[in-house]
Length: 311
Figure 1: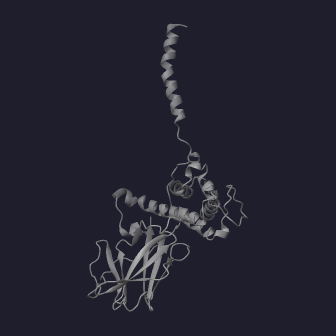
Figure 2: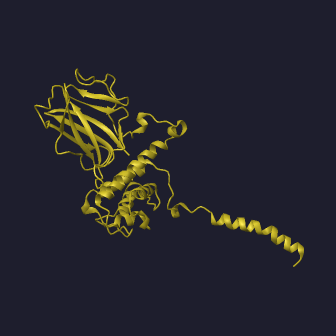
Figure 3: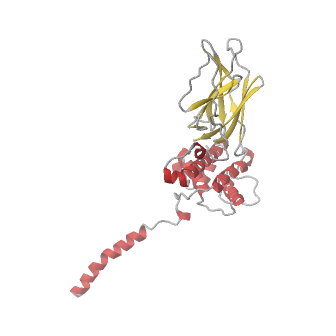
């Protein structure tokens, strides 16, 4: 071999290596990338909500998923509920669509056996430890993730880096916000309020609510409970815990933005007694995140507010 040929081979070698390396690192097509995160739209929110409606009872859950979703099916796995919802909402099902991917990311976060899964949605659905409540939890958290992304990825949030109260809550949720003339509790009841809260109601029944209309980071009461718990303190002028315990207060609630089972509460409210005034405490359980209307009823005097329950 001539010296000139040898030099030519040496000079050509690096480019071949570079070309091979570039080929090896070529990004996978979106449909093949298990971690792809497509942009979200309002249609994706509707897909998750529709999937929750499809899987609204344990009798409709198919826990032996094969990712084969026949049109005539009467029961649905998590994967097939999402596929059917996508077909109904957009008519354009994609295996790596935004709604599907957000549900997978939720499984990544909450599934204790995630490391054993090859196909996240199917394997979580079929996991013997997965309950119907767990399936509902995946859909609820996926819905909340998409709603949050819609806010964060809005043009104003991206250009200004901030959001207003109206932008922090979907327009479909008419949360209760501070009125122009705030309610002031009568003496001797406490009138001071937290910096991020306000009094809402009248002398017949009042409560403190958040100024931004949202409750976030609510805990699960027990490890196996998928609902979100909040404790509410209600006040009424003249209520005396020494004369009425437990108080005759009932609390009900319903979700406004999607189908859901109703709000659950403790068996009864509890009295909270102080030296010169009393209040009533009630524990409530939101089965899902989302937009909730809550009503307190004390002997026929009702107080209703709307709150956005967020992750």
